Image 1 (cartoon, rainbow, N blue to C red):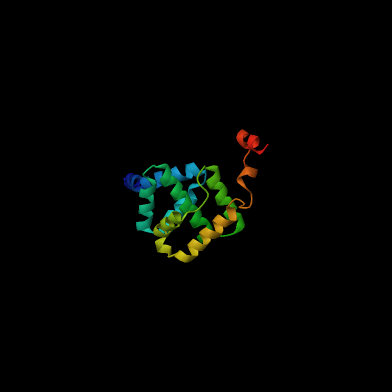
Image 2: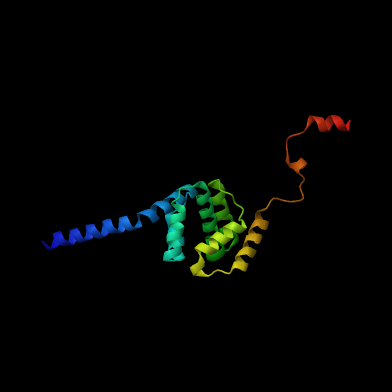
Length: 164
C-alpha cells in the first residue's frame, strides 16, 4: 500500500513538472534545434535571467517567429560572449553558430537593448555592452578598403564600351 502511494506521488510530481516546464522546454527546443546546440546553453541563459525575465524570454521565443528566433539567438550570443567568456575562441565559435543557422551575425543596437532587458537581473553595464557590440562588429566587418568593383564578378558591357 505504501509503494502504491509513493508511486502515485512520484507520477504526480513528474507530470506536474512536465506541465509546468513544457512551455519553457518547447521554446528552448525551438532555439536549440535551429542553432544545432545542446539545450543546456539556452536553459542556463533562461535560469540566469531570473524568474520574471526568463518567463518574458520564453514568451518571446514562443511566438514562433523567425525574427524572434534571430533576436533570441543574438541575445544568446551576447550572453555567451559578453558575460560568460569573451575569449577569441568563444567569439568565433558563437559567430559560427549563428552563421550555420543562417542568422545575421552582426549585433545591432536593438539586440543590445533586448539583451539589457532580458539580462536585467545580472545588471550588465549598458556602456560596456555597447562598446562590446562595436568591438565585435569591427572585428568581423568586411574590409572597407576593397572597392565594390573588385569584389563583384559582374561586369557591365556598357561601361566597357564607353571607355573605348
